[in-house]
Each structure stands twice: as structure tokens, then as C-alpha cells.
Length: 510
Image (cartoon, rainbow, N blue to C red; front, side, top):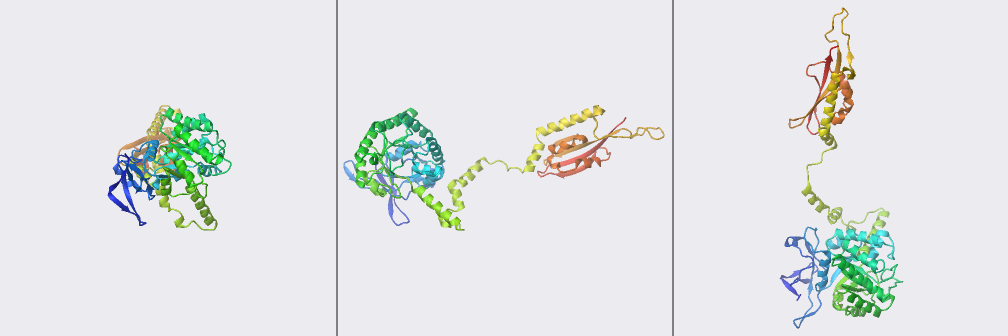
């Protein structure tokens, strides 16, 4: 027995002056079961939800009002699978609202506002994605792709608009399985022909009774084959296309075929809505409040609950106000102004809604040492193993050049072997120059110590990029013969390593 009982906190007062009882369910978990640590992230929906009068143990229970706690924070909690969460909503007493979204951002805003589930609207997705009317232009693949982006952006269950299943019963099975893989908690399937027409518009036609029922049976089979529990919402458009009686017959047949929720589009009066809710009373009913002037009367939530509806969709609110807001902003910009501060959130608020702050906090968990500058990257590369290998290769080249004087064509300077009087000059021979580069880290450990023949100076900057722009050849030409070499350069680079460069002059006797 599922009833509502007042909590120990009794009543909670709201700013607008009315007092609403805060209720907790007995023997009934909320649609999302979350640990108590997440209570700080819960926000109470200001919408008033009413439970119908019921009989419990032979006694009449008066209607009660309660608010629904809905998650409005991040996704760091253990949630039920989407279909299971949606079924909890359908099994719970009361009536629940589901605005229709059309992209990931609008879905995030629905969740942030505290709603427990949402719909996707084919009308709105066709408008936002294609800029075209909902007359069959948008494809199955585009709806799946948009739906996947929406379900990945939120934690609440999403009921997807599956149109007419995009073909016969076999196409319906593929559609249902694809919507399951895309992460939908439910799918709405209708009995229109192809190409379909948008609800509350002219020219709608439906398939035969037999084909309409077979679509629902195919959807139920696809659910079983997938091992899923996706909620199947069976919609009929036969109220406009045929008659009200036909729509009631199809609703009963859909319930017998295994539909989880029934929906007749474009009912024209409150009396028709009541008669529909009395059909197949054990199956939840869905209402569609088409904003802006559809065929169905716009009723408030208490009235819909009294009639017998369980869930209600608001298909055009988000798209409609977005269109108007964009038009107003464009008018302001064209007139040389910018939208007024009250007509749009601040930049900080935009970042908060989109999750920048959550991203920055999570990024800290994976933080490493600060990124080096470009020059530091080059310097570090210079001390890597491949640079050591280059230096070793250059040293081997130098040794080979010593063994074979013929290779020593590194700008040698040859002097006469004898003086004018015929005696031998002690400095006669081949003078060769080489450059010694010594790199010492700021920790005092030697990173590099290599000699490079003068003829290979062009490659030095690839070893020590910090020497870029230094005329090494000119410095080496000025080097005189000194034991141990002459110090030419001595400085610290940007990361604190000490770079020293010595000029060496060697003489080989003839």
C-alpha cells in the first residue's frame, strides 16, 4: 500500500506566502534513489503536485499536495537506469510535468529547474536542427544523434519522440532498439502514415487498425529482445484523422498489445479527456498541453490530476520563448544596443550553467606540474637521450677525423714546416678548432659535455636551442691556443641550467 504521510518537519513556507505540506512516501522510493550526502544538491520544485482521492482500507483519503525533490547538481551519485527511474515515476501517485527539450542545453536547463523527467519534441528538434517544419524532413539518424547528445547531458529520464517508427513493424523494432542504445528511458510511437504530419496540424492520416497495433507489438518485442525496460508510449492521431470513438478503440488495443502509457493527441474538450482517462484505467495516461493555441484545452496541473492523467508534456515552451528571446536580442543589436542585463544571464551564470566550475574542480584531481614555456620545452628536449646520441655521434666523428687527417678539412690553417734558415718551426703543422659545450643543471649535475668540430657548428642549436642567434663561428675564429680551451660563453638559460662554451685549438705536427 503506497500512501503519502506528513514528514516530521510538517510544513514548509514559501516566499509567495502559501504553505505546502512536505511529504515523504511510505514503502515507496523516489524515482531517483540517492545517498543522503547528496541532499545539499537537491532543489524543491515549486510546482504543486496533487494526489487523487483514493480509497485505502475502505476509507476515503482526502487529496493532498506535495512537492517533489529533484536533483539539480552534478552526476556524482548512483542512479537507477533511465527506464527504471521513469517507471518509478509512473507507479508513483500524483501527476508529473515533463517539458520538452530540443538539444543538450535545453535538457540541462530542464534538469536544473528541478523536473524529474523530460521529453524530446520532434517539432522543436526539426526547427532547431534543420530550421524546417515537422513534416517528415528530419531523418531517423538525425533524431538518434540529437537524442544521444540529450541523454548524455542529463541524469533525468528522457522520453524520446519516435514519430511513426520510420516505417513498418520491422522498422519500428529497429527504431526502438536504437532509442534504447541512445539512452532513452521511453519512446513515443504514433500511428500516422509516412510522411507524417505534426500534431494539431491539418492533413493527418493514420494507418489501419491492424498495422497500428502491430507497430506496438513490434515495439514490445524489440524491448524484450534487447533485455531493456524502455517505456513504450502509444500515441494515436485518429481523433482528428477518423473520430473520437476510433481513438478510444485504438487506445484500448494498444494497452492490450503491451503499451505502458497511452496518449490521444488533439483531444478537443475536457469531456473527451475524462472519457480517455477512463479507458484502460490501469494504464497511465499522458496529456499534451500545446502552448500557443492548439486544439486541446489548456488545463492547470490540479485539473489534469483530477481528470486522471499521470504525466503531462509541454512541447513548445522552451522553443517558443527561445525564438522570441533571440528575435528581441537581434532587434536590439540591429538598433545599436545590446540585450538588457535582465533579459539574459551574466557570463558567470552562463559558465555555471554549462559546468565550467565543475570542470575546473575536477581538473584539479588530474593536475600535474605546470606546463613549461616553449623555450623550456626546447631546452628539455636538448638534454634528452636523442640529443646525447647526437653528441656521441659528433664525438665519434671528431675521433675519426683525428685518425684520418684527410677528413680534417675543417677550415685548417697550414703553416710552413721550416723557417727561412731551414730550421723546423715548432708551431708548424695543422691547426684545427673545435667547440666544447658543457651543460650543468641547476642541481649541479652535469647534463652534457661534448666537443663539436668547427665544420659542424650548424647543428649546435638543435642540441642546445638556447644558443640560437649566437655567431658561434665568429667566436671560435677568435679563440687562441690555450691549454684546456678558452671560455667563450657562460650563462644560465630560462630554466636555470648553466651553459658554458669553450674554444679549443689543437695542432697536429706535419
